[in-house]
Amino acid sequence: MKALATVEDWPVDNVSAAVVGPDGVLAAHGDDERVYRLASVTKPIVALAALLAVEEEAITLDDPAGPEGSTVRHLLAHASGLDFADRDKVRTGPGERRIYSSAGFEVLVDHIADATGIAFTDYLDEAVCQPLGMSSTTLEGSAGHGASGSLSDLVAFTRELVSPRLLASETLAEAVTEQFVGLDGLVPGYGMHKPCEWGLGFELRGAKHPHWTGQHNSPATFGHFGQSGTLLWVQPEIATGLVVLTDRDFGDWAKPLWPALSDRVVDAVTARTNHGDALGG
Image (tube, rainbow, N blue to C red; front, side, top):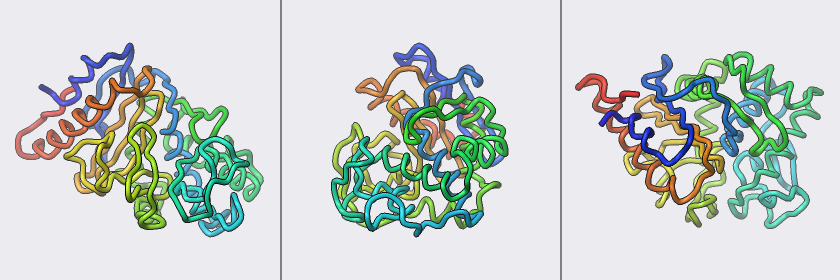
């Protein structure tokens, strides 16, 4: 069976998916202009804007931000100690534990806005969305989970992660390197991981099990998933990314289907060079 064709059988009303390489779409399925809630797939998009702000020297990763002793780096790596949703609640000291925090991203974008003098939604549009042609992507509410966008937009974003053009390759390499090595923490929906590897706005697959990516994904795979039924990963060794957008909230239905699709995509891309198109869509 063609790799992407399996999404036709998923228990969702709408699904749009694409496999992305350095030069763009390798295979696609569904409406590429339908706008979906991205939920926490918002975080990597916000992280890209933050990394560009670092490159522009508007901020640094070591700027104090968040709780006492916390920095921009801590916020991006879910290591500031902030609560998941309450930006006024500190649960641990910075660098002590990986506490997944949307509130931390809200603090982060306020810091960027203060440093640049530009409302963060405008900064995101000017720094990320316009250059990448992400014309349908908007951010409303939380910078941790408030974005919406289309498959077409997320393809452009994923291509940037596969083969960066806006961001320096050295900056991306730092962003997908484990920060605050060895911290334990929870992946929402998948329980405690020891350690719980995370980069700068990107979850690192590492040796996590169970996980929303596939068993054939390498430890270097990075990305994010969202509670709205969205996922995005990039596997550097094969210069390939997968983005899937649905309109059904994440739950038990997704836990077997997402890894199975990921494995099929990795296998198909690996085989494609020798055996022709195995991706479909």
